[in-house]
Length: 276
Image: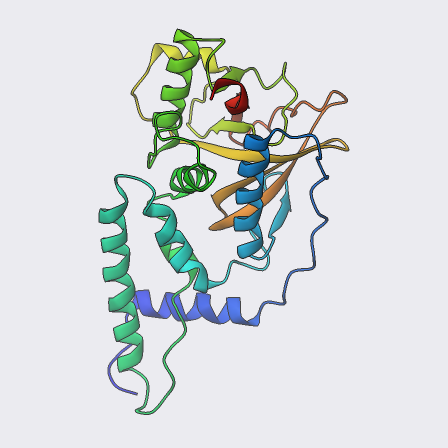
């Protein structure tokens, strides 16, 4: 073995080793079957669930701190595909590829000649910049949602602003109509969004006073409702594409998040079939 192992490579090996030893996840309960969705909603839900299945149908309840088992590092290529959906993507992909190639070269250099290639670096190394908005942009494109409806963006706040502006100018014709999460029961195909700021927004109307300003947000696509749950799939959740099951009230509305978790501030009703 030649050379010394640099700290970053040591971390990659440690994380990769832990991932390889993890037991496969048990099959999660499937989302509630919804048979009465409109074609556009159905298409979006199908695309999102296909990505969720690609990542191993990872499922969590609420807001856990860790994902067991962690996502496989082979999903590195999927993260790059999501970045291809946004204007900022080429630069991010280039930096990720440079880091990837440097890590792989360093790991290869330390192996005896004839040793099989090293395992890919852990998926968590590609979690920055956050790719959750790129994931939403990707699934919208795959579901044939026009870019002028949901503009591709590397940050949720930018397409949220576009959806709010369209709804303000044309409430009846908006493809995505904003609702207070405490007053609206989501349906599969809707977007449920939370504000991850230190001082979060608690209502979408408060965002109208600061359009264009960056805020760390996160949006998931609702894929199932009922049974006291709102189930939604999002990207870069614990470094993976994950289905989260949020508690709901007796009317199916998402309950407020715990005080130490990102606050839900809007649910966007998907009205694509009525506006196109």
